[in-house]
Image (cartoon, rainbow, N blue to C red):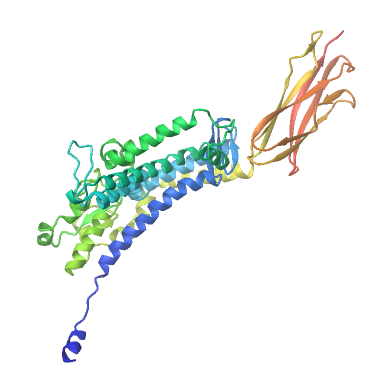
Length: 442
């Protein structure tokens, strides 16, 4: 009993930093999965995709033409400006926290070590494949290959969502025939699956380190104040006998010696590694951390310095980007508010009667991907002087239809202007002016 009381009186120190490291990794995993989910939800929700048949972008389930100036320019301006500010602030954090290539590479690494051993390694650096002797079994290889193939088949579907509606994707997956699907689409899909399988199985972070042009482009916007890994050098002896942060870095750099332009992707795994080691040793907090602001010895001692300067740093370095972002969002919003979901033109037909053209085609386009009913009418011609093929045009989705308009021979010679109206269910009217010429003796 005495010993129990004595033991119970000993304070138990729980190192919160180790838990903080695990929380950091958990947040990053959530962002990675959220990014993949968002990549699927964007086209599925109609927020954005590409219509390959019409050769047009689709925003909020609306077909966007280049004539929709405010939507096109506003969206482009807002997105590009926000990217400039994001890269200027957090640098290559997109690579470590959101990039699908990095997410898949990390997942492939975890599956490889789980099935082939902790020291298992597959790389394109010319080194032989390393496999644990106890796990070098055919079943493990088959399971690993099956997981990689399943992941490749799922990931290869995501780009297709940006070109086809969910209904067509379901028909494609279930091998149902549809004239809107290209006959060679299954072969194209198989090629994408093969490429993705090779990428997951062998390429992995080799792409991030040596082949990713996108990461190099992001470096254009980095400065000394951009988010980076900072190292607290107050414990040189402890760091000298420990390099766990370096061995845990799947990019292959020393996190304690980061520079402005390097291969670091700000994933934070080195912070988690240092937290776990120092937490187990009960020696304190992680010696590595995320930091904004100048890279200096003084900044190493002031962990909160960057938190106070990050917003001001962005506004200081990119005021024009902030203005362009707001201006682009205003243009985009105005474009959505004033968006016209229908368009029509009138052109002459090919029927000629004695040199006189009496046939016209009213070409009507619906830009919405839902059923739409439009009413066509003619104003300015006497009753009985024309014949309209149909007064109502029904659309099941975005597309074009022609309505035949025939002018009677009873009109007197001269110029007869008239208007062709197209009215939608919301009461909006669109008008096209036509000048019909009746020649003498026609």
